[in-house]
Length: 109
Image (cartoon, rainbow, N blue to C red; front, side, top):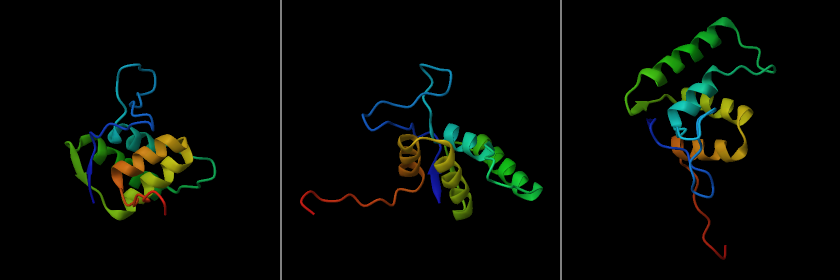
């Protein structure tokens, strides 16, 4: 699945999310995806192999150009981590950017 890593993530009101500790640096797909992949959650009991796979994915995300071709399982890792580690608005913006499968509902339906 081809993903544009430089896509800025926007809030519902159209303004962009900023990187932690910055009022100016825009948070893009790469920034959130790398932070998500490197995050550990107490309920996850990752073994060494799983941790190293995430490390390699973070390296690939970091060293890629503007786009990267992600495997379905890599997208699943990013989505699962973002669901645990970020508020709904950040999660939704990320999913819209990396896996846009949502079909808009027409008014009146």
